Length: 385
Image (cartoon, rainbow, N blue to C red; front, side):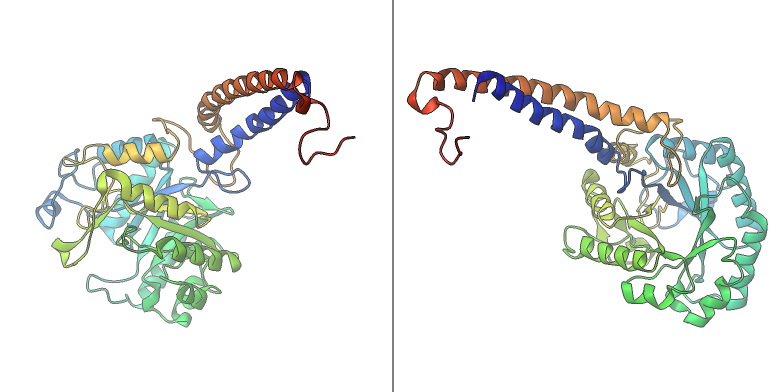
């Protein structure tokens, strides 16, 4: 092989590698197959008043012991969430005067901040018993009537996404009677915990939003396998899959027995990786501010902004005020900037590597030119033309 041909071969190889870097950069931003960025929604709780912070808490928000009626707190939450790559909140809701007031306030703040909102309907009472079917059906109907047309609501396939929590406590026919009147205007996802549970309700719901906050990825070797299997089952029925991941868990002060250590962000990284491996339509972060079960990422007295920093790292370096690129939307300037930021350092590294390889091949060609084995066609295993 002549020096010119050797150099050309190496350069061709390296150019092929360089051409693949933008695709790898997009993967670093965590795009699904086909290039669409996977939206990230965080579970958000609006049940706080100053007295709420006096019970079962081992940490407190940096913002202080706030009320969920405080629009200034909402505005700061949204700004922080956007800075870490969170596209919207999944708000815990059922129809009460307080919940409705707070949801309307949050919707108004989110509209001004270009942020998305959806709800998870709490179908179980405080004792974990199912609410009456008629009450749940009336609440879903009210939500569809009051909020379904809001441009702030997060949508998939043109419809606002909602989640029905506690579906395992209802029969198939009860769920059907609750969801049938509203599915023309809303997507209603169940919260089943395994493939069999999902398939039981696949024909009367629009997918699954599994709420799994207490898994320990270090001690549960089937964690990622289970999520992937559930994702496949949901997609086999053409449903939407909202996959859970969390930074840690500790509900011992509210009657639980389990603790999942945060490990300074390693638990969040491991669960995020497993979630992404299940081909999600939406990532469901548990949670923004669940301080009783200690699954929050909201900046806090004990943790500072550590878990937003880890999220920002996982999401490819989000910045404050960016416009989220959600499923079904065209990539925006921010996403292209993030992709380029990963692209150019790799481009320079590969270019330098190519130069070294070309020099090495050239030197080898010079040495072989003076030896009997360096002649064309003498390389072992190669045919002479």
